[in-house]
Every structure is written in C-alpha cells, then in structure tokens.
Image (cartoon, rainbow, N blue to C red):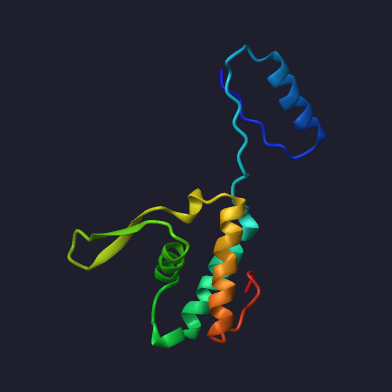
Amino acid sequence: MPYKVRLSGVRQRAYAHKLIDAAPDWSIVTISCGDRTPDQNAKMWAMLTDVARHKPEGRSWTPETWKCAFMQSLGYQVQFADGLDGSGPFPIGFRTSKLNKAQMADMIEIIYEYGARHGVEWHDKKE
C-alpha cells in the first residue's frame, strides 16, 4: 500500500522514518517538493491582474493569457486548441495547478521581473 506523508513537522517526519524502517527491501521512496500554496496562487492571480490592467507594450490580454505567456517564458509547453463555436483558440496543456512550491516561486519571480521592467503597479492580493 503506498503512503504519502507531508513533512510539516517533527511528528510527520518521525512517521515517515517509521514507514521507511518498516518498508520491505526493494521498496521505492520518493521525496518531492510540496504543492504550491493557496497564498502563492492568490498572489500569482493578483499579479497577473495587475499586469493585465497595466497593458504593457500595448497588450490587452486577459490574466489567463498573461499566465500562459509567463508559463511559456519559463519553458513550459503551452498549447492551444480551436474552440468548438469558432470563437478562437483556448489554452491546453501544462497548468499552474500542477506547479510545486518552488516552481510557483519561479513563476511569481518572473512576473515580478517583467512587471518591474514595464512599470506595473502592484496591489495587495486581497484587493
């Protein structure tokens, strides 16, 4: 039976050690960076909204379109498919919901960097 333990404190780490000690030979242990946080997600969308409002380089894009552009600039494959009603393409493929905490930090950093170069005024994520 596979186990998943989030290492968020001493008790969870002790439990993970216990599972490893009891695991049979040839078991596989994988340790990965944690998922993005709700705060990171809220911050990203607030920043994307700020960029969209500022319209850098005259681009009147939605926050969703900006998200795809930043994902592409980080090297993630973003693809588009044609809509069923002929209304134009929509993004498919790699989603920010699949980013881990470190990848989301990179996403936020690249949005900051781009915004700083283009004079974007940042607002609090709760506004």
